Length: 118
Image 1 (cartoon, rainbow, N blue to C red):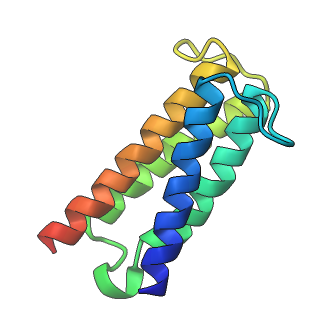
Image 2 (tube, rainbow, N blue to C red; image 1 turned 135 degrees about the vertical axis):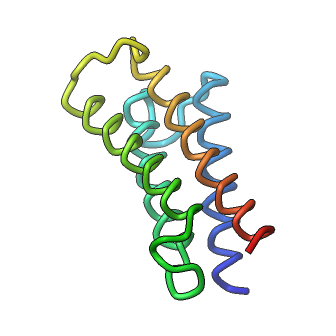
């Protein structure tokens, strides 16, 4: 039950961060979209470390494999943003934040469906 509370807390913080950034609010130490992207990336990595549940589902669960593919896309996006590499669909840090939030939501959806199916 404690693991669930941690995941819910991290998810709520992530959603609040995205909502605040897109609403134009500037939080302490998170005053730019790039800083928001990095903060969301850190929160996402913390959530991912709690979400795979390898002891329960194993490495080769189709949902874990799909989550790994999405995770690789997230790491590619993070590398491009942090190294200032322009991607065709990512013109600025605001769009990178939106795409990261969408990919994270997809990973959460995969974990939820895995819990319902397995």
